[in-house]
Length: 331
Image (cartoon, rainbow, N blue to C red; front, top):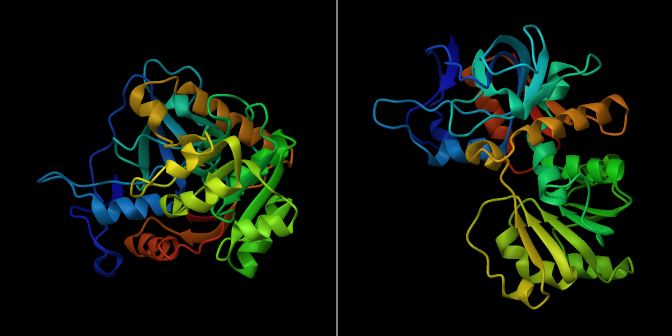
C-alpha cells in the first residue's frame, strides 16, 4: 500500500515526507483494518515530525485521527463488520493513518452515523477525546462544584470541542479565549458564554466581566508560562487541566490555591491497556450529539489527496498556531 513516511526528524523548510509503498498492516486480535477516507492533521504530529527520527533502516508513519471503512477484522472483534464506516484515533506506538490502510484497536473507535461525512468525522476524534478526558476525567460529566470553566485557546480543535461538550452535557458557564477577531467569532459560534482575548490581561478582563474566579481552567497551549496568572483566577481547590507538552511548570502558585493539576494525553488508555473501550464510548456519544445537532464538526480547511505536497500544506497551516477548527485531508 502507499503511505506518507520519513526517516529523519526535520523542519518544515526541509520537508522530507514522501509517498512510498510500504507493507500492509498486520492485524492483532483486537484490530480492525480500515481503508482510510479522511485524515485530521494535528499540531502535535507536526511537532513529532520535527523531533522524532526512525530507528536505523526504518521509517516513521504518523497520523492518529481518521475516518474510513472497515475492510478486515481480528479474531476478537465483534463490534464491527466489513463495510462499517468508522472514525477514531490510534496508538502512537504503532504506524498511523497517513496511509491507504490502517490497523487499529477496535475498542478506541466508533461507527460513523449515516448523517456524518467522512470529512466531518475525521475532524472530531482527537479534539473530542482530549477535551472529554481533560475536563470530565473518567466520568461522564464535570466533578461537583465546577460551574465556571475557562478555556484557553478556544478556537483550536480541543477548545472547540470542549466548549461544545460543556454546553451539550453540563450547565457550566463557559469562558473561552481567542486573540483575533475571527478566532473570537469562532469561539462564540461554538457556544461560549463569554469570549476574552488571551493576548492581553485575562485576569483584568474577567474582573471587568464581574467574574472573580473560575472553577476550572482548560489550557491548550503555553501552559507552563501561564501558571502564575492562571492560579490567580482559579478558586481555592479549583482545577487546572493541561493538554499541551512543554517545560515542567513551577506549580507553586497552584499549591497556594490547593488546586488540582490534571494532565491529559489521548493515547494513555491504549498504551497502558486501561479500559480502552471507554474512548470508543466517548466517540459514540459525540457522534450521537452531532446527529442531534448539539455538537457540530469542526472541519474548516479541506485538502485533497494522499500526497506529500498536500501533507506539507497541512503542516504549514498547523505550524502557524493560528488555525481555527481542524485541517482535514480527504483521500
